[in-house]
Image (cartoon, rainbow, N blue to C red):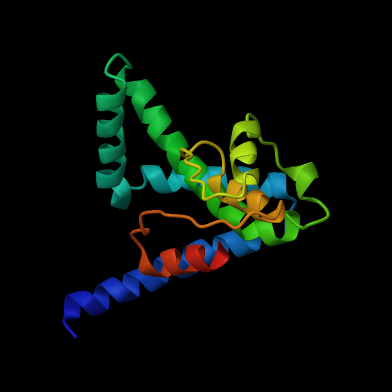
Length: 170
């Protein structure tokens, strides 16, 4: 095995251990405390020197999407994206505890789901497309708790170890 491949695997495992460790620690705290802490960690990760290329790429995408925004606003929204990504990881770890058959309706809020549920109730194949708004993982969990069979299509994550954990969690 080439040295580069071994180094990549070691880096991936180290990243997975750090992410999973931080998320696991957060599952023993109150959910709001965990989410706030993960948001801070996501922002810190985004601004770290080793993440500069990815942050710059996110900002460049915002330049294309929102050319009228100033640089400070684009940077702030890119940082918020990292906050939300970190919070998503925590929500994924918290989901088995919080999204039980008994308590999910108290924890999740869905709006404008009526047309999708009506289409699903017809009993025919149906494709529900959602953007990255809120936690799309919770959406799939809620639909399955309502009794619908759910499959997801997604782009694999850059980290094979984190991707395997996310697939297993789904």
